[in-house]
Image 1 (cartoon, rainbow, N blue to C red):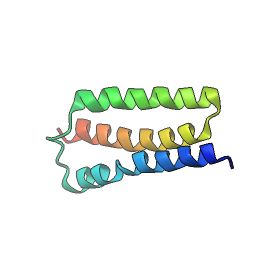
Image 2 (cartoon, rainbow, N blue to C red):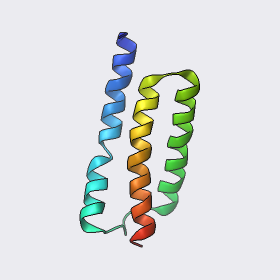
Image 3 (tube, helix red, strand yellow):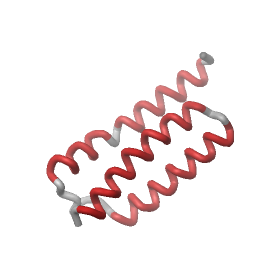
Length: 84
């Protein structure tokens, strides 16, 4: 695997893992008062676009990171909509 891809995967792991504490906290407490609906809506759409971009480029670090981030961001967005 090229060093460039390894660097991309490392960056992807760091940025993707950063969402796990928010998902866990929100799931556990059901407290969504501090989460912006508009921010997570726009962010989730942006992640979906990054995923599409990564697919078109066949840039697997981008694809893998954004698949996972899309799942996590969508989970937070879904909880925001459900637990208002």
